[in-house]
Image (tube, rainbow, N blue to C red; front, top):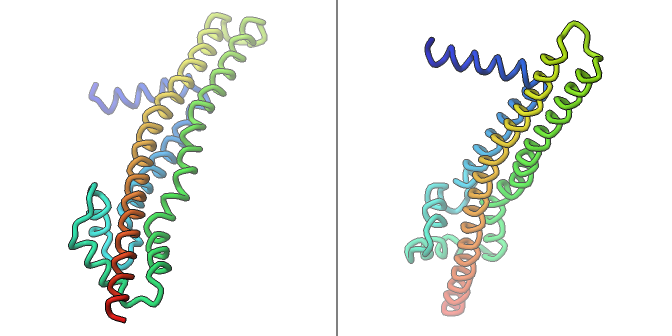
Length: 202
């Protein structure tokens, strides 16, 4: 039996034992993966203005901003009638999309363990029904074992989905916070430089 056949066999066993909650968790896992990939893409600034996305990623990805980058941004803002407003527009293009998507991603991730808990309750409910003898056509021990399996597998699946993705999302959020702080620092330096150059020219 090759690896793919074994994987499909394990998936069939988990899906038959985990019930409908297991498949909801699998669908949720794909939704979380899509949300995290979109956040990763948003942190590379596809909607950037003034500079290219690659330049903004390179500038804000470093702890200290290069003098050449500050000079190029100052030159780009020098012709603007309102440099502060222009920098606010740049900030909106760079950071508004991930800012909107992080809460949604955290809600999806937080719902995974809760759905696992729902599967636990559903499995225990099946177990108690079997103990009470309300399941016909199935031996009580098989019904009890099936209910416990459902309870355990959905709990485990919810945690396996929720814990690693929460860590990944928290890491992406820390990168976002770092880049936002660097942008705010650069914004202050650039606006001071533009204001000084305008005073010298006037």
